[in-house]
Amino acid sequence: MIDVKNVGKRYGNTWVLKKVSFFAHKGEVIGVIGKNGSGKTTLLKIISGILKPTEGNIYLNSHLISYIPEKPILIPELTLLENLKYFAKLRNIGDEKIKHEISFFKLEEHTKKRPNELSKGLKQRLSMAISLLIEPDIILLDEPTSGLDVESKKIITNKILDLKKSGKTILYITHEDEEVERICDRILILENGLMKFLGTIEEFWKEYERFVYVTFSENKKTKLLRIEDLKDLEEDFIHVRSIGIREFLSGGIENE
Ligand SMILES: Nc1ncnc2c1ncn2[C@@H]1O[C@H](COP(=O)(O)OP(=O)(O)OP(=O)(O)O)[C@@H](O)[C@H]1O
Image (tube, rainbow, N blue to C red; front, side):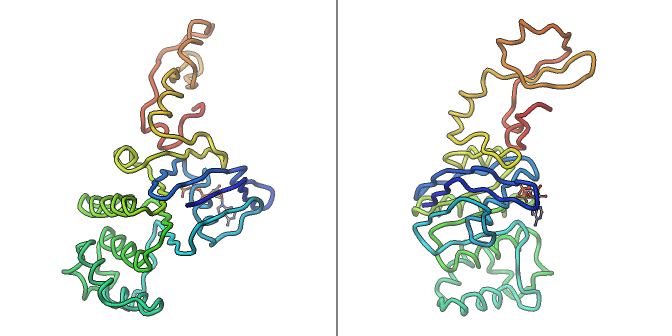
């Protein structure tokens, strides 16, 4: 489990995270969602211990924690198998576990290739295989499927579902609507470092079903408004549309 209490992070005079509090259970995947720069990576790095919070506390039930960055960190001189063996040796992990991960991530045909000979998808699969060697209880994933081929996406998302079943606690940064629906138990939306929403997807829709985007005739600006407020609008508007799932995935639920 992960217990985040009132966490804040400041760089100079700018707070990039503020008053973030939530609890993630065992066997739960929380999708972390928000625009670029909303603080998602900072939050994961703080939970992993890579960054120190300026204020607040993090409580974890295990020290076995893996943070998997968006860009894989691999040793360029070593082959795929040597990369796995190197990291396994550092942690006293046997060959059986390596074999298991190679097989799950379908890496058998590529074991002799160096990282620069691997596609983006294969690199990400290798990076995940390495991170999971220690059998972490807490897994923090920073956009693991962003820009990957269909097969790699499928293998990685299936792995996340497996990990969830086996009782791991997972935070998962994503911009993909299909993945949110399929994998995440709850979503946490960050906006300018603040928690905008935490709950299930059903709860999200309940909260936002009454909202629409309205584009005004005069200045062509778009605002997020409640449906019931439309009748009181004095300005002319040219366009009204409901919020799609993509809007909140990119964090665009504020006024445009
Ligand atoms: N070392 C740093 N010094 C100063 N500002 C930083 C530093 N690291 C991050 N920031 C700022 O903190 C804010 C949050 O960054 P963060 O990377 O957590 O956002 P994000 O939601 O993960 O974005 P992205 O989707 O682009 O990865 C951004 O405005 C970023 O510029």
